[in-house]
Structure formats: C-alpha cells, structure tokens
Image (cartoon, rainbow, N blue to C red; front, side, top):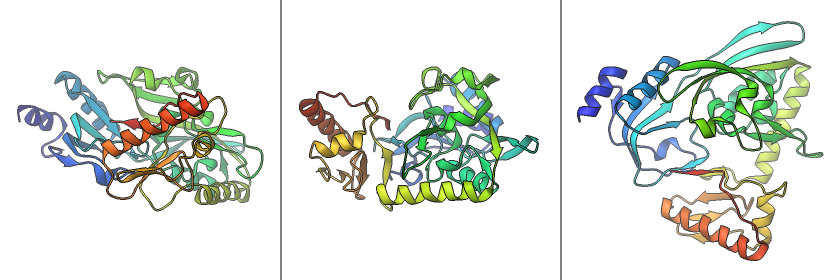
Length: 309
C-alpha cells in the first residue's frame, strides 16, 4: 500500500488503482489484474510514470492497443501504464507534402483513415491495424502496397521523420528515423526499452481518391483473409525467410487445431483465436505444439511476434 500512496502522490490522487482486470482492454480478451494500473492522458503523464516506476524499483509495462500481446490470467506485477495520449498536429505543410506530429497513443487505423481521406499518402495501407502509433513503430508494423497483386511491404517506419522517446529514467530526447534501425518486425526500441512519446510522419499529397481506394482495398483484403469478430492477437509468428508462416502452419495440418479455448484459425493459420474460454496456459500449450510440429515436419524454428506477458 505504501507504493500505491507514493504513486498517487507522484501521478495524481486516485489515478493509480490496484487490481484492475486487463482482459477487457486486450484484443485477445485475456488477462488478469494489474498490480498497479495508471492511464496516461499526456506525454508528461508517461514521463512521470516512467520516473516513478524507476524510483520505486517497479517493473513497468506499457499497453497501447494491446493487440499483439497475450496477458497471463495471473496478471502483471508492477506498474501497468495504459497509453491514452491522443493528439495530432500539422508541423509543416507545402503543396507537395505535410509533416504531421502524432502522439504514441493514437489509433493507427484511425490515423490511416484520416490521412487517407485527406489525400495524404504514407500510412493508408495500415488501415485495419488494431494497435497504436507507439506499437506500430515499436514493431515496425507492415502491410502490403498491393494486396491483390504484387506484394510490396509498406512499413510503419517508412514515413517516419523524427520522434521523441523517453528512457527508463524518464529522460526524453528527439531522434531521427535512422536511430530506430528499422527491419522486418523490428525497431531499436525492442532492445533499449525506450518509450515513444510522439512521431512525425512526412506524408505526400496525392489525389484523395487514390489513398481512399488503397485503404478500402487493404481493409477488404483483411476481412477476406483474416478472422474477424473473434478475439485474437493478430499474426502470432514471424514469417521465415520470406515464407508465409500461415502457409507453413496450414501445410503442417494445423488449421483448426485446438487446445482448450484457443485454436488455430480456420481462415488464417498464423492467427490463434480465443473462443471466449481460453486461458494463457491454453495459448502457451498451443503455440508450443505448433512450434514442435513445424520443427519436426519442416525443420523450421518459429519465432513469436506476439508477446506473452
């Protein structure tokens, strides 16, 4: 209780709570209680929470759209920060492009729709991405520029200009795109555990009909090829040397394979779905089984994209 008192003194009276169940905030609809739970509404809230956790020697877990994590039914120890920081502003603009600053808690799908509707190109293919800007940059999330034809990857980091990040002690700084060392499903933030506060995107001005067409096609393709309306955490494993893991798992005969309330989607084999009764143990057993079968049949070691907490 002493930590709760100190946290509320630092972050605002009544803003830190104990035992908040996390499942409703996740796309997988699974997760136990947070030891300490705090919702950040400003960049300053995030920095202060990081400092407070560091000073109290508490582990800190940042949750945004909570779309590529599976949280244990035991919950999360330490301070859980849910990023609710939402803003965007135009920094520069000319006839050819717009430089837009966006908070890390902003919905990536909403941003893709808004910019696409305005004829600002660079993010339109990311419509349907369930996470936030912070998560998209952290994972360097991707989609494809022509889902019905040539599959050219478009990454969240492609249009990035610069960003403000905060380290584990609460000190912030502005870095350029090169700092992130973007690669497939990778940014430097995964190694440094630094937290994104905001990002600027350099977006080209084009005919709005073009960007609207692109995000409609991307969204339609997601609906056609991915499970919708059922809890999941998106693609569970990373592709292997350009090979589709969904195809690999399908060819291993695992589509529909089920353990408890968790199963391999019948629509896309790289999705694990929750029928509403799954536990974290079900998911862990299922992913272990998938990895074992694929290893034995194909000699391939699968690596998770989704984070188990």
